[in-house]
Image (cartoon, rainbow over all chains, first blue to last red; front, side, top):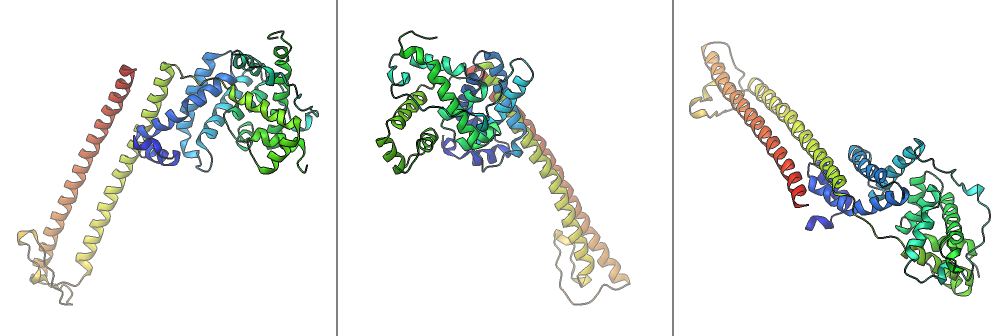
Length: 192
Length: 180
């Protein structure tokens, strides 16, 4: 289909003039990324992730007039999803841990030269990493996941409503925590 | 080495490559390890899953329903615009008949056409003028009935559009559900 090659901006224009097909293309474009983001943000709560996925799209549809084209549509969607997830955490079903600010960050050592991650080559690596990621606090997990999804630190900072330096500090802290969680693999003890 | 390790690692995580970074990484084992580590972690991203069919159906229904809302808004806008335009045309026509100097004898009401031959003379009182005014009102009445007819036709078309689009949306939603 020719329309599939169109930019988000043009497709949104088409949708605003009443063409549901145009928005369906945008939905196809981003549904997996958004679903994956929510699933990893709420690793043990599939039902809530499903619910928030649906709520994110409905909210995006209702606030489409507020969307400005200078921003990436996916970043905008993820910001809506992030806000909904934070509301969910605040509601008490699962309390977010204290946010890590750049100023609070201790000076961390860099990766060890014999980093366990460099040593791990077995097929369970993905599972081990995913387990370790799920143990991170929501803020750290989110930064790590969004960087895995190739989102820029500028967009991540906007989503988390923090400075770029704070986002970078959270990334540094997430990597340090992952290194620690995965150290058992390197020493041959298996997962901790 | 001009670049510091902290700066180099931020660039590694940001995915911004530069010649300076390449030079630094080649000469710094710590940053080379950091780059390998990040590449490994990035590649370990789990495969993306599809949302459940029921959730997808609900979202697609919301998309179709909002599209329908946009379509209705457009029809409503069109409905407002057409009477406004018609009123403007009427106003211009009335103003034109009364303000432009005309020769009453030159107005022929037959055949539904009006020929105006300007003589620079204003309408005068008397029999001739009364005949002229009657002819003008005949033409205005014809214009008004034509505009009323076109408005009615527009309303019928708009309601047919709405009904057809409602059917389309329902059909599309059902087709998607059955094909899934």
